[in-house]
Image (cartoon, rainbow, N blue to C red; front, side, top):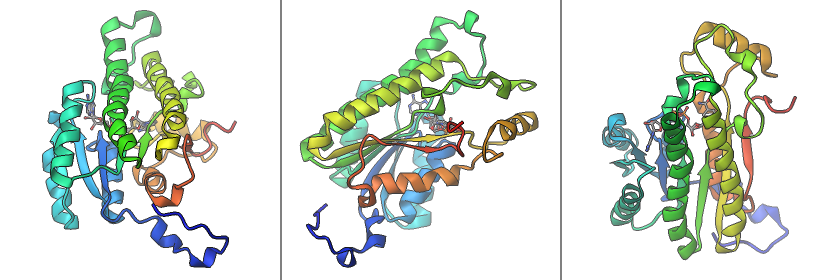
Length: 274
Ligand SMILES: NC(=O)c1ccc[n+]([C@@H]2O[C@H](COP(=O)([O-])OP(=O)(O)OC[C@H]3O[C@@H](n4cnc5c(N)ncnc54)[C@H](O)[C@@H]3O)[C@@H](O)[C@H]2O)c1
């Protein structure tokens, strides 16, 4: 981005700052609840999307649907973010097709955390899987794709921690439901938060910005009791929708946030203010 050394805001096209026209954005976990909203919004702002997700999520099919709808070239690829070779292939194939990478969005997560195990009984295997996918996956994506960006001296990375990186889950939220949030999820997300801050400072002089989006309670046909509990503890008294998270991504990927790095942009309805 060419910066304008001026004090005159009238020479700036503010709408244009939000454009993603021609930018190539890799999104991991792109077939998920929030990932799908991210893909749609990036395409609406003119960006090319690389849909990266596990084979079982059919990323190639989703990318083909997006391309057909938006008439913008996209790419779908089966990727396991916790496997180094798989992430290297993601980088190489994206460069083969588009010749550049402008943005990386780490929106994957391991689902096994939804099976609530009391902390006293957590098995090592489940702990390892959550940490491997959530934290190591984010590390590998940042290392392999972020290093490319640092070399090119341009790029925007967005990672996804959780409110549970900052505050503990209110256990009353889960009363009367089959849901829960295990410690491994909080621990992996706390690691993502720390890693993102580290990289924001590490790559600041390489023009690679690293920011975070923290959503909270995104509605996905939850049990009625859970929705009721959630409303009781949330300042805004409701859950959020995936499309309410996506505008934050446009801001962080675009030139509108050119002086923003290390930010954790919380889209949590005020959950963490009280
Ligand atoms: N939904 C929420 O309320 C909420 C709240 C806080 C944080 N988050 C975070 O936001 C991000 C997106 O959440 P979501 O609700 O869309 O999750 P989701 O479970 O709907 O989607 C996650 C996606 O990650 C993919 N994935 C799983 N393992 C993978 C692997 N090894 N390699 C590549 N992809 C893999 C899944 O196939 C899935 O498509 C996650 O990091 C999540 O932890 C979500």
